[in-house]
Image 1 (spheres, rainbow, N blue to C red):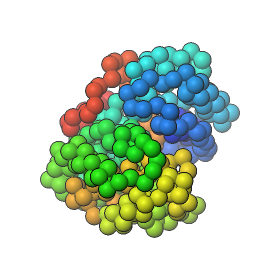
Image 2 (image 1 turned 135 degrees about the vertical axis):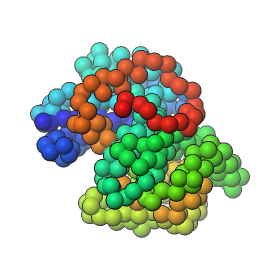
Image 3 (image 1 turned 120 degrees about the vertical axis):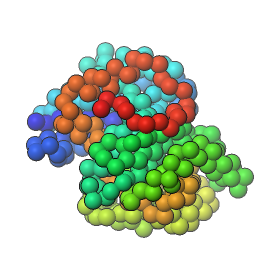
Length: 335
């Protein structure tokens, strides 16, 4: 069986085509299209017509690419930037009408649940009680669990793109006061989730997302060309030092640093502050940077639970989007 997933994020549209023999998604083709929604759409604003055109084109190309590789219609989802847009339903309907692909938006709790599943499968059962941090463009997902799916999750409006718009809108190196204000907001939003992580005392902590991957490379982790099986760790002390390096540079200058790509250079500082603050509040000194995340989680749920669960998740897109922040709660979505 060959299946595919399309992830519409704040910066890119990503396609993964995978074979599902033996219950494991084995990638046979990946592709991405630059979208950069986070640069054009501030949190809570409508997706403008120009950005909608780019989104429709990218999703359509992803669907045609998946078909050329022999995969059925992709499991397509959009994350926080589209989820929080007032014209979200119009965007989803336009994509379906013009591409034939049923794009849906996942609630933040479901994103965290699926990302946890992907990380759990990658890390294996020997990792024991597992804590997860995932920094996206619009939100931060936190999860903890002992089994296949998490015991609790939190989705918070602490995405790297969102906070860059709020605290560093001009792209200039920030003042110390701006950095302090950002840290203060992150601490306030994370307080309850961090207390739960500390209380649980996880044996293993993982970080996913391109933000953490790039920060890990900046802090000395192996480059991506060495493959996914090289262990990559990110130390809190190293991340603290990286904040100072990033804060002293403009986005263009940050793009010359190891691991920092030009499209994500502007939001790299906010991502580093969120990552460091989250690790400090949760008591995590080191996290493993995990290559599997939400896309692999979607593929695994589809393989293990069949297509009906995706239909149930997709139905949630027709419901009103929850206000930010989503409170800490026990995970119980589409079990």
